[in-house]
Length: 201
Image (tube, rainbow, N blue to C red):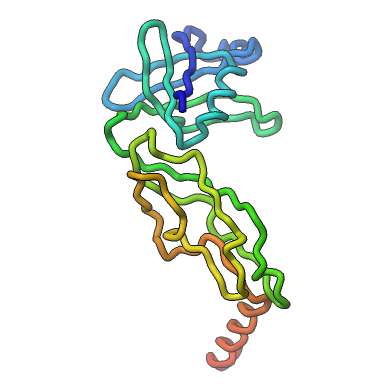
């Protein structure tokens, strides 16, 4: 798959002038990391939004500034709280040959037959897992197939999720990702615990 690229240029607008920059369809970018000089850049907002949408928080991209290229990953994306438009993007330099850690989002698909049983319900416990891999080996997202939950006591653990070659799971392999639970079980256990403890004084 072709790497995502961003065309950027040095930023000269600072302070209050940044608001005017954003109104003109330009978004400030900050590139830093790997003991190199930080860069204050800017890029066309629509193109930047498309690139970030393609790369997400886990896939690397290349920032091209004149004749230079910077291999980076999105570190922080600031958006307007109401309009969701881009306000500022922080990008951190990474190496193509050094492993990095990233939180990979989980996407739930399919339907659990086990959750259809009387008194049962579906619980989605995790929405991302932490992995370590080369930047180009980190998945954009992982699909969780809920159809694997066929019985009222079935569960999908973090260790059950298939990772691409070279990727290592850092999240506890025994952590629940999704499971079928029995409604009221937690309340019953709490009541038993209160009874054993002698109740309120």
